[in-house]
Image (tube, rainbow, N blue to C red; front, side, top):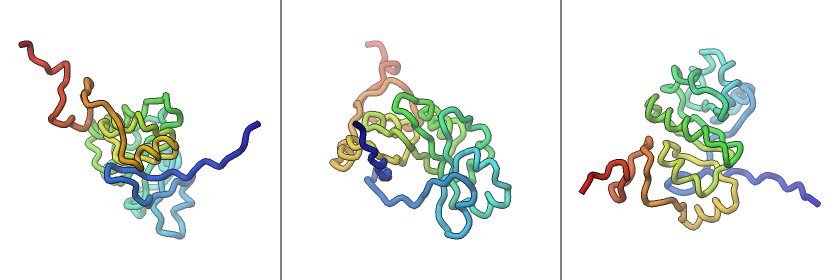
Length: 178
């Protein structure tokens, strides 16, 4: 017997802790009409917007990129986008890690990179290192750990990332022979 429990509303976490979320997800450009809300549109919907609509709503318009979607259509517009949300539809789909790294290092994106979907506590330290800075969290374990100030992670890292590692620790591939 299964019970249909509603999916909990995501809570937005940053390194400063939980914060109020100014952004809402919408399916199409109709959400831009009326209220002056900050809207996250799926990439396909965002691509249908004309240049004037994008320009008028630039400060309140973000885009959601699914793992199978390319970043290439966004690259010319990254300077105008305050937020790029990268989806994690399943905990074992890590393609959005690569997209965050590409946004930060290859494309020099300085806006907010947000993780949405299956954001697990074990992934957050690596998400931070690859360029994410905001997280929509619904997982009960992740919520409890973040509320208690325990985000976990390992003190040593072997792979280079968009975010420099702290001065403590070391990298095996940078070690010098004794």
